[in-house]
Length: 296
Image (cartoon, rainbow, N blue to C red; front, side, top):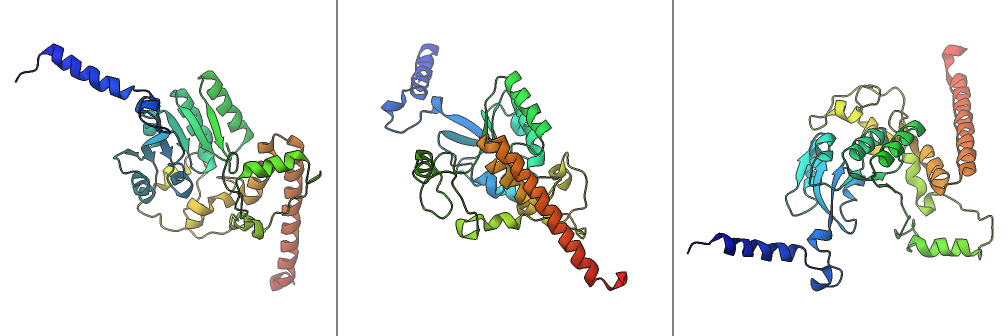
């Protein structure tokens, strides 16, 4: 039986009516397709893959310059999603509403600006950028293009606090109530989960290695100065190098100063870190000279 134009339009009308049906009709907690935001994740390493389950959004695209990471990203959801090698292709994908940036920080500024210019909202991993200047350019682009920028920080909403088995909100209320007194002393150690900070320590005199076939090292470096490839420079240990991040100490300064909107804490932390680094270098050089027989 042939379908005339009027019957065909009625069929389309029925489909359209379903796609915009109110969420309460589909059940409590269900997000209707018309209300659901879509996202694309740039950087599908360990941190980036953790972005897939954030509520209220649907993953439609992933991007990574490491083919192995890209394959892992494609497997994050059962549905077929777009996979890109170049972040610019993901940003220009019309199916993406929100761009999640989970790359090393030396890429954050450029990617955020390009996403804002393309009309995308941005969900960026910490630190926001590698330098203050880059951060200012990002905020300018966000404001000029009327976009939203969200910085992803641990424990900001409901994540379980390190080793304490409780969400952060009750702890925040307890501190703000004054019951614990003030000033409040907080001890950071391996017993509270911060031992991994010291894993982010760079190394000197790294031997050049062959770039793995699955990694586009030039694209990974991007705006950073060229250094011969070594496995310790990329992926999980890149934070130990100023070319890409501020290291474990820099992360602590940002987390406990800048993100608390307390510039005095940030600057005191920065000064203390500089003093500690200089002291450690002086002690190391002194010991090295005493052990080096060539200087005798």
